[in-house]
Image (cartoon, rainbow, N blue to C red):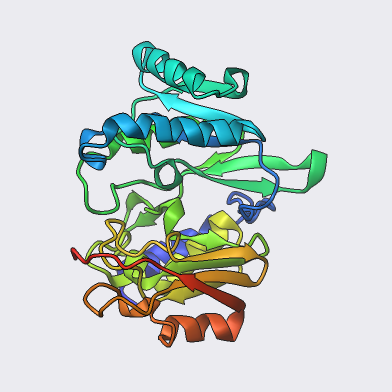
Length: 301
């Protein structure tokens, strides 16, 4: 381990004494646990959906309609004009606007799972306390226009009485840790998935200066996990370069659903998705797993 990584680890360890979420009893809950709201950002980036932008508004509205039937929707809008447009589309789509909280914040894109905080909880039931852990968002290590998304995430985090921006001291320089919500998945009981390609050694790996032990320390300190399952890779053609959220997910503590295909060629599919691959052996060793078909994609990486 080189001096930079040693310093990062030392800093991460030093921050555990009564200040990190784990030290205060917080943990990242599983997605099936009770929640108060879902955060969305009104879409506006033209190149994210070529020739489909008009339809995307209605797709987001349908998502908001379904969410609003069971919990609140918190919607990021850039300004009054965008709020007016969103209100009109939501209303025409049958969304209960009394269930929508509009929050003004400029964004680059609409992928809130990746750019907004990871929420953590302490306790259960009515006594449960909620905090926010806002990692740095850098456009998946790929896109230059990400600063507004990162700032919007900090703004959301600052709404919570307890919030953290994971930052380590690396050779005397403070450096924020990069992580997206889609690059991890948790079971709420201490286990987390992520991929080596995304966080450790891929072309667009998020924290090249932090090795496996250092990364595991950060995940433990700030998300309250005790076991990290490292999957080797993600699917081909994914701009996120290794996210787990599109092929491998927890559905209950210790139970995983993962995608599989028998029709794609090696060029179309990363080796980690073949059902006989090391990924499956990792999961089979640690957890119960179930596979489902995955549509054939195209490779652009």
